[in-house]
Length: 151
Image (cartoon, rainbow, N blue to C red):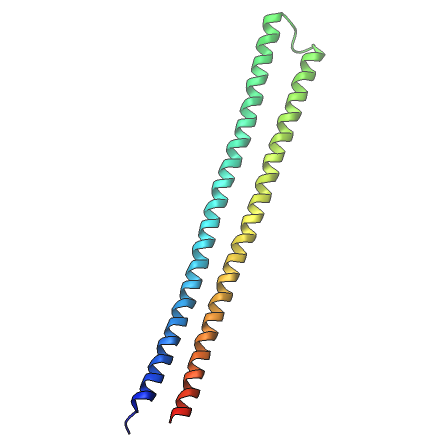
């Protein structure tokens, strides 16, 4: 039994359509994986940036303390008993710790946001992949239906 040219073309067209959707499905998964990888790299970069900001705040605090001790020594003040000197240092420490806390909180919020974006990218990729697979199966069914009409 020979297949008519029209039927063969119909089957070939359906097969190619199915292959196209299968390829699109695979590409959607790969795209989602690459997006997730990019977001994870971005999260690491932001974490490093926040750590650098934190270190900068602490370094500024140490510099300020050293300058105040030098100034107190130059002026002949007793750093152990001078309340105004202690108060200045305490206030600067409070500011530095508050700034460091804000940096850490911002880091946590960024990490959470990026983790959520990563999860969303993976889910969207899976959904696209499923949609393309379903379209591929629909293509096969349409081909089968069309072949049944031709023959």
